[in-house]
Amino acid sequence: MTLLAPAIEAASAAAPERGLTPAFEFAVRVYYEDTDTGGVVFYANYLKFFERARTEWLRSLGVAQSEMAVRLGRIFVVHSLDMQYLRPARLDDLLTIRSQITRIGRAALTFQQSAYRAGELLAQGSIQVCTVDATSFKPAQLPQEIRSKLTSNQE
Image (cartoon, rainbow, N blue to C red; front, side):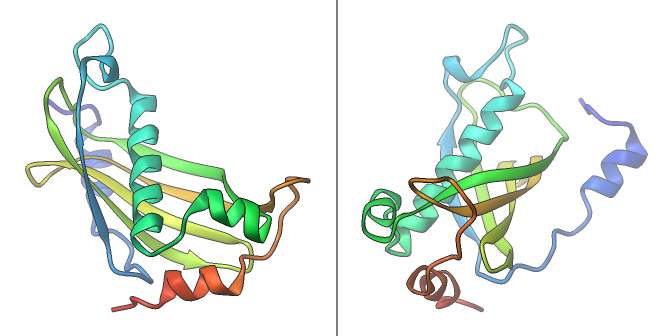
C-alpha cells in the first residue's frame, strides 16, 4: 500500500545525498505504544526513532551529549526538518534507521535519515541540528573536538 501518489513516491525514493560521513545503522523494534488506532506507526514516532539513532551514533563516536553539555557548555537542538512518509511500519516490525551527515557547518549539522523494513524504504528525512549554548540556548560554534570526532571516520 502506498501513501503517496506514484510520481511523488518515485521522486522521494531517489538516491539519497552522498554523506560526509559513513552511514550509521540502528535497529528499532515497533512496539504497541508506537502505533496509532490504524495499527501503523504514528508519524511523529519516526522522529523519535531518528533521534535515538543520532544519539547512539554520537555515542559510538565517543560523544556523550550529557558530558558535552556539562564540560563544553554545548547542546544539540533540532532546528528544522523535512520528512517524507512512503510506506507504513506496523507492530512488531524490526526497522533499520540509517543516519548520515550530509553537511557540517560552523554551528549546524544536516542529517539524512531513513527508516527501512527488510530493505524497503518506509520514511526519510533531512534534519538540521544546531549547536547552542547550554545556558542561553543561543547559537554557538560546534566545538573542534566534537567536529573532529564527527569527521574522523570519513569514507
